[in-house]
Length: 145
Image (cartoon, rainbow, N blue to C red; front, top):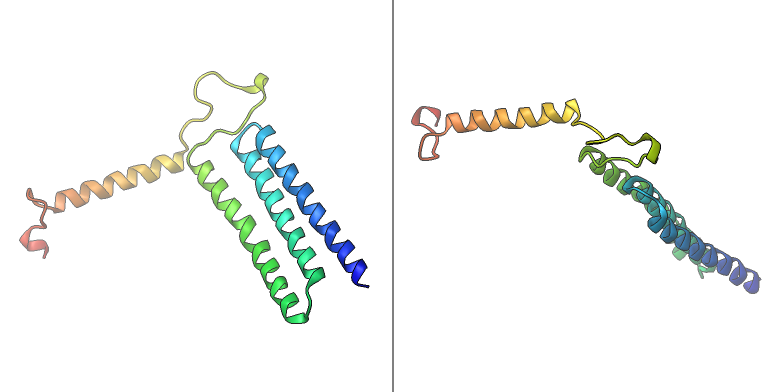
């Protein structure tokens, strides 16, 4: 029985290495940040989960196995969420997505989104109102206090 557990854990650890290798190849081969992020995130999640499954198979008692299961659940929730946050930031920063050569346009690939224009306009209006309320020395006028 112990030999079977070690063989299964070895298979899980080998799978983790294969997933990691695939993620590294994807990070170097894919053309843009979004596909690279997907490759790295997927490989990172699957390889770490495979290592935890191997550790779960080799766990000596139920207390340690329960802790490993909790770690697996936490990692399954947090890793895709972190990748989504990074991708969302890249998208909101107007990072262009890859397009095949025959579909690329000359000049900027995308114009600024209307939502981003509105947000910048609101920020500038708030700064202008704040500056109007402050006096020439930078302090608030007496009637504002």
